[in-house]
Length: 465
Image 1 (cartoon, rainbow, N blue to C red):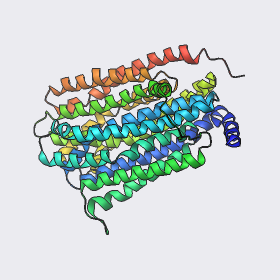
Image 2: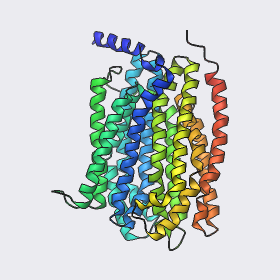
Image 3: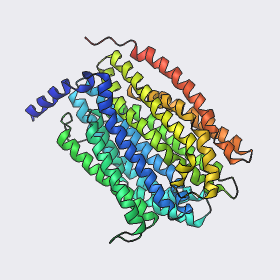
Image 4: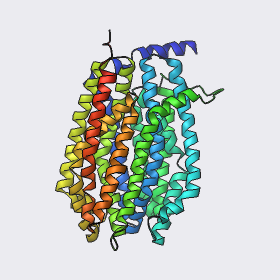
């Protein structure tokens, strides 16, 4: 055991996040995550494409379920962000004991969060769905889909946590494999379980949910195996484990603002569904359009999130190692990459919106609402590129509360109110302008907080000897 610990500390001292060229390091850390995120986006779209073949009501039900699923992801993903940043920082400080304790406490939190959402599912799913639609078929679809995804969602929580442990030590290639495993499993089983191909029964929307949880569970299993066999910088010691309140507090100091940030997005989606539901005669179609938009924009946003997943441990590690030059260079390259990705997405949304919506077996009414929506929303992508990167920088440096403030201000105090006011015009197309309006405030606040973070945290760091 002692020799193994010496070996791990030796490996830790030579961690590539403090030595490799920044450009090459960002590529090696981010590209695997960006590719895996692209596959995740593909599985999200494929899932909705197959569901739309059942009927438009099924697509609407999945859109209504989306905020609840996003809330689950916000909790486990935000906690994982805190684990990632804290563990990477402790690696930079060469504190092996803190690294190990952070990892096992993170796994404990994943279990607690899964149990919490099982209880939430049993109590709140029906009231939640009925608050957005009175269509009994859509409610039944949504109930079936959500109960399977939530009651069998342990793979989501343990998968997120386990992947972040790999990412925090620079092993993003293995994290990519685990996410690819889950996504590909989902893509393969979607048509098989939905339509009953081969020996499998036709399960309809329940099949879509079953394929989702099957992918999550298999991905989590692979991720755990990689951590136990390949992640040599972490000693997983569970014997005699007791929750460490100090470490849990440090995880949530970074992770809680991220949870709130993403949960606010879930609340915003729910609010938008309610606003779109006021348009009589087209409400269900408008909600389906909004849900399809989120599936489509994942092709643009997911790679940027993958970029950030690779960037956060680099920034956190070099902050712990007191190397401001590597931090600023990492941020600059990340902004450039994110802006390039978002620009491509904006061009596609502006030029071929009808082609994109045709993927969802769109009706004429869905196209008449969706095509203008994509063209109106697309310019907001450019501001979002910078905001997303800077938000992750705040998290990596322990100022995740700034991300929370920006998100709350953008979504609760501008996006939703402006969407509501625009909806009073009685024209559904006007509602989509709320995204562009909100991005102006988000960008302004993000730049203000970054200048403050740079002056208070990055600039004072002593150069590495």
